[in-house]
Length: 241
Image (cartoon, rainbow, N blue to C red; front, side):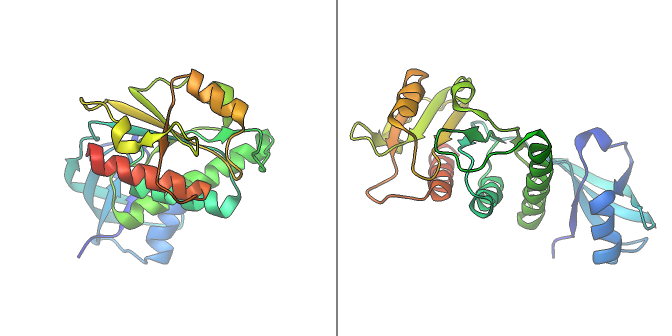
């Protein structure tokens, strides 16, 4: 039976004793009702996982001593997802599945047809909520990794990302299958650009193509934006890992 898992950011690790605070302490102490002597797992989201014995529980923190530690190496090919901002519920679902499918990073993109518009304060609140959502997903599926989440940027900046292979699922007639687009030697990184509800405009597609993104088809069916992102991650995971 797997141990309950809690997240602690890499910067907060201080061997051999770890301290959970804020939401993670509340979840451990109040929700899970863990007590001194209980065993739990703590992970940093970057591949490090420690089995720990709780030594102290209070209202604001949980202290634990590491009894064993392991490290999981990242995948040889990192996959970076650049999804256009879409409505809240589908976007959070996409973030959750991106964690499960092993995305290395997520860079939200603002496009002409983006219907969600956030000011600076709203962006900070959304990022905090999204990161929390991603951590919960990692805890539930017991992956040791949490993708790096960036603040939304415009498409013009997003397409400048550096990657060994750049892909954009598109409805264009000049597409090839995703498998056909993969080079003979495995790339060290792949960037995947996903359009919003209503897809990219013709001008935006031209911008992406000019920046080196290769149009690929995901099959004969038209997929929702969040489904296209998840399908691409799943196919790439199968082909490259």
